[in-house]
Amino acid sequence: MIVLMPAPDVDLRPRVVRAAIEAFRRSDFHAVGPAEVAALADLTPQDVTDAYPVWELLVVAVMNRWNNGDRQALWPIAEEQGAAAYLRARLESGLADPGLVRIRIATLSAASAPTHPAAGWFRSQYVRSFEDITLALVRDVVAGREPHGTSPRHAAEQLVALYEGLQMQSMMRDDGDLLSGWDRAVARMRAGWGAVALV
Image (tube, rainbow, N blue to C red; front, side, top):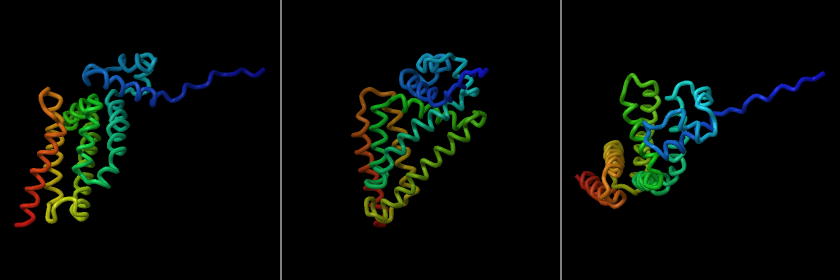
């Protein structure tokens, strides 16, 4: 007699990650836990904990799919229009999906905490993103999209600082126009890069 055993559960991790992204979209980063994710995934909190025994690993999986997915989807803009256009597109994406902005800001804090279990991963992702912007600016200068003689490294520092600062302000202020503020500041920076290049 053949006894049929129940099929093993399919890997719940993708389902948990999708539910976690939705939970972070709906609520504050610090208000989301296994119970909130489980409710959206139609699972039990224990199922979530079984899939991700360490909460920080779930946050890493969320950022890998959500933030890196956004970055990869928009990267062709950097290739075709330049670093400034790419970061502007990411700001626009953040306006449409503010939960992603909230979790980005929250994980910046985690990246700076040496004792945080995922600090190394968050920091490496940040450094990689900064290096991507620097490389895009090298290409921009070569292609003539940015003034000849612009220092890609210094320009990346300025653009990333502007991107992060305006993003933070957009979360805290109701009276700002994020994209107009970006356009004005980038125009002034470009003028400065061009002036330096002429010296």
